[in-house]
Length: 197
Image 1 (cartoon, helix red, strand yellow):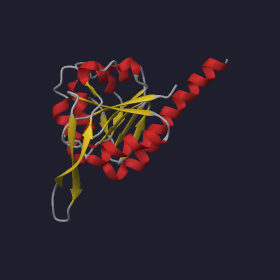
Image 2: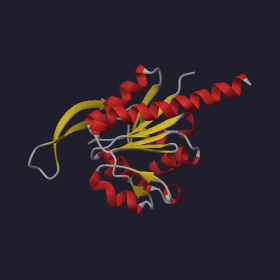
Image 3: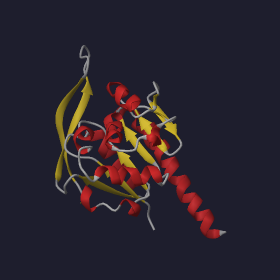
Image 4: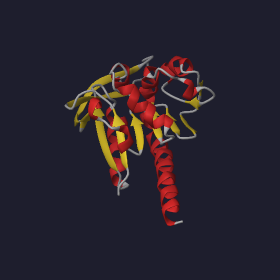
């Protein structure tokens, strides 16, 4: 049976950070499921870096149909979680169903990938002890959020800490997905070993 990966996002997601993982997962034979606060067609955005700007620019990008609403997600049905960045994390973290979904993956030690502003979602968790003594990275504007979790902010643009893969922004997607797929492949191999012994 194919592994299922849940992608938590919403309107304002950075287009590359949601589409790149979505298609890479499908390319590897995994089922990628887009979840949002409610099932709808999402509006993604393109964030880009412009010389002379102190921050990024934002333009409308592709439409993205979501597959399932957060309220209907049974997290135990999924093997891993990806949280894309963009502006979506700042508002999806207010959804009442989001904490129970994210907490499941952290407690079950399943692979979790958060890129760019994705780490903002973790602030919705009532119990942040999972992040004590952990290290993760995020877009540099989210350094304070990472530290508010009790985690150490990694200055490098890609970091792996146990089951947690974090990336700085969309230019880091090749390494981010390589490391995430490595984790997902290891969990597949562990299951194969346990069923053949």
